[in-house]
Length: 342
Ligand code: GYE
Image 1 (cartoon, protein in one colour):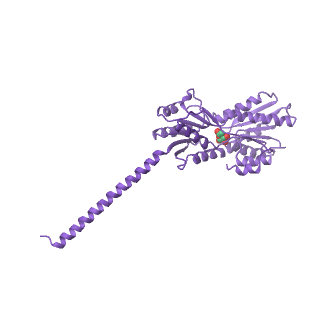
Image 2 (cartoon, helix red, strand yellow):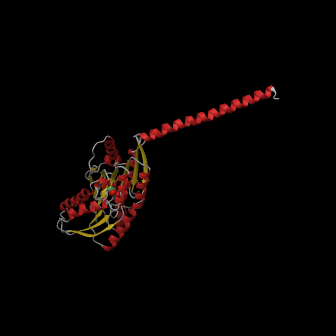
């Protein structure tokens, strides 16, 4: 037989166990509800997979920041970002992973123009719209992407050519032989291809423009310096350097100065650059870079506007160009330099 006190203590134990069990169960239920709320909040966000091609230049860093600032949680987005480190295969892997995660949109800056058909076809079959950022792809089926947001690179190249035309005329050098070297960006990239075409269209009108050599320098400062050193050794009489981005320009200017020559306004070698990042604009204001053809990296905002239009069911155009200017010592102001945060 049990003692009365034994029965009571057993009853208390059972009661405690029951309370504990209910607390745990209640906790579980509560957590589940919390998770459900979290998941449905995620579901309301627009999930964007961004494949950035790399981080080779100051321009690229600014482009990445622009995307990260546009696709924030506060703006209603969930961003999955991948940096491909200049490798097309990494971009293809990233896009495949976005497809398997069933993102709502794929945004990508293709490192080169060719070789995208298969992966873009996979995105299309999965029903995921693709928006091209900065550079373009060379595919016959234009339905493989919705639109492109970026720069008119041929126009940028022509702007460089037109500036040189005017500058030579102003200095009375439009008849004399002008020796030019070109530092080109990543081989096969839209910015390299477009800027090269644009400049050569203008150069074709001037038989005195003598293009000594053009070489790829990958849009990096180190490679720009290396290639420029080779140019300087081979050609003692360079008049003009066309450098397809600011980072290569920085390296090239170092090489020129090391060789004992001077750059910029009144110098031995005229410098034509592209991008117009903060450091380069300062060099324009000092006369070290003669002209900088602006390339606008702030594309995140434009892309989110395109996504909003698509969400509303509106038609979008096949191409959106960002606004860009040309900077020389005449129009680079202190305010502009202060405002340029890249
Ligand atoms: O000019 C360069 C970058 O494709 C416009 O890529 C872009 C170019 C830019 O590395 O700095």
